[in-house]
Image (cartoon, rainbow, N blue to C red; front, side):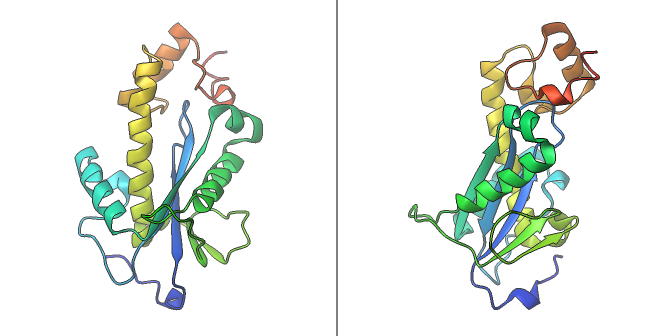
Length: 200
């Protein structure tokens, strides 16, 4: 059971933020910012890494249906190579907050940010929580949405870049993926700064 963030009860629009793809060898790092209604928790929500693919897909739709607003931020492999993965992750989170929209497509500006293990360069009150996806219901919701959204992108990348099996390993550095990189060379969505040991 998640602990209630009771000290934040005076904030109306708390945006919960998490990322996915930070450790991947290929593809964007992606973040979700989401504002959930207070006092309501969807059964089954927990850290996305502790859920099956089917469970995540089912919860994804329920979370978005219940949410007050949500936004996605994406940072490309070339930008990650340019600014490093930590700054790329923080940028994705910032973009996710800036992309927050309600169901009518109206921009929503949150009054507080609760972030999984990071800080964001925005002039909004914020708090970083280590292992936030395990401790905060809202961050867990963001983790599920981010994971499903990126997994769907991996299916698109698999079609666009055949031979790497992105739909299976999702860009992570599995033995299979490393073998494909060595035999085919990197694609345009590989993070070259992550491949130095593989291609040496």
